[in-house]
Image (cartoon, rainbow, N blue to C red):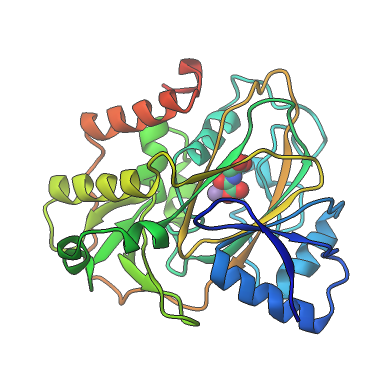
Length: 320
Ligand code: OGA
Ligand code: MN
């Protein structure tokens, strides 16, 4: 079965043409899995799915993650739906100064979904139900492409290493108090392999994110400098695919090897209704690490975060 595709970017990502995700025959589905492993980002246009249909399609790729219920903006939806919208379950617009908007601004830092969970996500599927006329793009960058461009010495340095990812750390960079103690307790820091190979074709990628904050056996400052360097390499101009949303777009990405971030938009003015389903990974990427310690964010870490968000156009008012 040959899929009809068109590249999104010269280095990764394709649009899949002529597929209605509500009706995918078994042979087409097998081809989609192949395309996912090969291209890392798949775009399906014109998919007017509701939450149940999105869940049904997503589940064909594997069991879905349930969202963390203490995240207020997710309340009122199916347990498999993450609400990335600036409207709540009652369809009311969330006011611009609301904590939930600042919380979601964390998604405007480069990350890969659920890398702060012991078993990180395999794939995310984001459905654009209502999209703003300007801003609100989602950007993607390939850690596989970037890995393949690394100097050999850096690849050797990364091999076999384990990084620590912490949601409390990354949200703490955006603003203090965005995470309730109850929520923070649900997401303790976790170890993740720093290099991951795709199990189908063996191509490697490094695995970092805004949540990555330590490397086991390395001093904090050196680790953070290396992690930032890897993020910068992956997201260098020319390596980034910027997705400009049309209503009905469904974008699926491979969290094992792709970074993404949302871009700001005028949240007080335009509705942006995006629902995400998340396919769970099939196991931990690294063995347990005893006594994980995360050094608190330093001023340099926070400044880096602010610089990233400010450069992305996040209004200073959102940042604390
Ligand atoms: C996500 C995410 C960014 C966006 O869906 O996981 O980070 O553009 N989204 O909304
Ligand atoms: Mn995300």
